[in-house]
Amino acid sequence: MKKSIITSMLMLCAMSGWAQGTKPPVNDSICVFDGTVTNVPDGTVVYLALPIREHPGAYKPDTITTVKGGKFHFEKAIPAGDDCYVRVSKYGSMLNVKLNPGMKTVITGNGMEPEEWTAENDHPDQKEANIYKKYKKEKLADYLALNAQINAANAKMYEAQFDAKDEKKAKAASDEANRIAKQLRPLRLKYFNVMSEFIKNRDFSASYESELAMISQDAYYSDDEEKMNICRELFAKVPKDYMSESIYFVKKYLYPEIKPLKAGDQVKDFTLNDHDGKPHSIMEYAGKGKYLLLESARKACTGEVLDRPKEYLKELHKKYADKFDVVTLAISPKEMFDDKEFPREDWLELGLNETSPFEEIMSTYFPKEERFVFISPEGKILAKCRPDKLNEEIKKCFPFVE
Image (cartoon, rainbow, N blue to C red):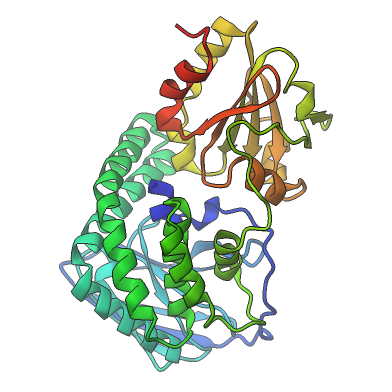
């Protein structure tokens, strides 16, 4: 569940394609940020991250400054309707700031973790966010401490991957994040109970929306119908005409429109293009007398790339190519998939992106991040699993594997 836990921190991994609300007219005006922090070394880089308008829900570092004498300062024109994030490092976790053009924000904090920082201004959503933050620090300190460790490990992973180009260090940091995430799992129920009870007595706001998305995701991935019903009751506070990225996913979790395939079901056909633009139907491989391993690989997300057992798959396929096929659905922007430098597999690889029936395929085959689907020679679903269970499931589903 590492990905589920840190979804909000890895928004660049998300695919666009959800319905978006209409943004207010752009009205740029200078916003001022004054920061005072303790236990942060002078020279520490601080980033102001702003929205990427071409990719709703994604942010990128924009303005850079450094801490001097325990203080930092930003001045930046921010469009009306946008919020922003303050980051202590290029790949670190982020402090979300709600604001209006021309507004001054005072940031105070202790240490290198932005979860220990607070932003104060006159925006009502920011004031509400601080009430949520204070409550979580009182009730969920153990959860927040582990989550901060995961954020730090992931920051190291991205720094090693993109700046140092050190795959070994990046993989070690990814493994560390996964290890800590396992410790966090028992606390998810506590988080759900604490925050579902808290927001039950709050009005709908940006913070309410964020927490509803968090606990709805947990309910969905844990297959807990009681949790799902609690979230459905909380969803009743969302205005009927309101739509955003978070609410899109909440509705998808709580009220799925597409029924996913399960073990014993016959595969459903779909068609996607390969690297040469040639269309392929999945029925060219499913039900043709050989076993099939169908994989989704989010190749624009460093964490998933490092966790993917690619070499194991290569060895297995080379040894048993006469008994099973592999088809990889490469989840990535179309321009990345079409790039000749894009890493290609030894088997059929198809592009699953904004130009394809993304939602239908993912909801049908991979609704809960189970990235491998095992299909029988007769074209029936045998099982689904995540990367850490691949070896185990292969031995169960493929009788020829020693």
